[in-house]
Image 1 (cartoon, helix red, strand yellow):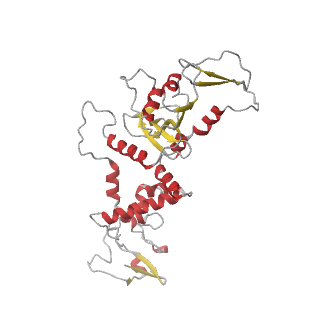
Image 2 (cartoon, one colour):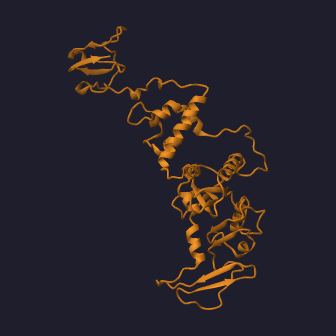
Length: 360
């Protein structure tokens, strides 16, 4: 699958094509086409019975827990992190699908992510399963931020999130430094007491120590000093967006390798080396070793090449071959032009050698 990410062909079966211009040697040597299709068709579970009280992620919970545990152990915490949603394209049938008609792709699965603001490394994520009727004391944005911040081990972390997740109550109770935009009609929102001119700012602070910056704008362009809070928000809000753009790639492992080697490694080179190493390791530990031969060629691959004007044509009726009807094997026999006007079977290979028609 990693090879297919950077080496694309017109169709899935072309990776096993006998044509050298389309077939992929590494994939053909690693796995057969039918075996690969069988593995990709579905996931098999040892205990398929689902309890009545199980949630929508019952079958995926072990996989999600393994990924989250690995992501958190593999890298130390970044001091600036962002929390936002990531929309994953999905066209299948699932109760997790969200229908968003205003989006370019209408049907997607929503994932809440906490990622490093600079590199896009994902530390934690939660798959959105729909409305939770048992937990309505807080808004959805507050629950998302509180759940994703529970796994933070370092207290010296600053979080950033957009206006959908931000609320005054969240800022007052959150255990980490945070910055975010907020809707003016939010509950307990600190209101400005004076009318501001275009470009002016007002700093307000409530009893819990949460600082609110109110900035007026009238559509005109002015050169004004930018508040530090606003600059900080613009610098660190894009971590999840960066991870979202690379969500189909092996992002976390690529980021770790760049940090360990202290140099920039192109993503394509990283994927090529990773895919070839994984295929090689799988071939060494496989119980059944695949042969170099790819098996009997299909009828589609029996293409006659360099036959020029001697290419046989399919007739309206079926008749017996003039050469093999006597059940005698014919090898490398020069065939006169008169024979070429008669019926030949479809298993004969016709080539041209020194301007002479030869049947194999």
